[in-house]
Length: 80
Image (cartoon, rainbow, N blue to C red; front, side):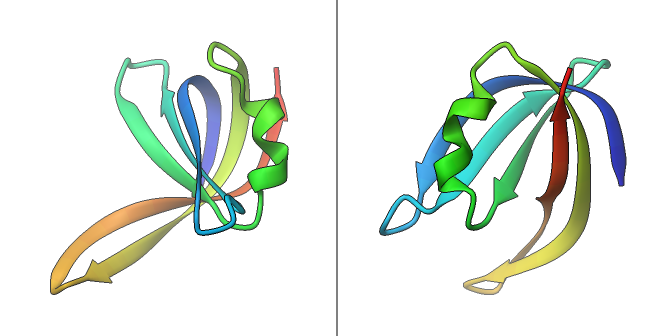
């Protein structure tokens, strides 16, 4: 799914070796969404709060302890 406008409001490294990113963005309609970027912990500096990105994400179902929810996985991005 293509997201033409996403402003970063929070970013955290996650995982035992901080190898992944959890990024919270706000779109043009002021709704926030959390993205997961597996294996991209080294790219944390590209995700400064306030920067605006174009995103390519996939939607995946996450099942954890019998709880089901949708999550967004980062495929690619461009800083605007």
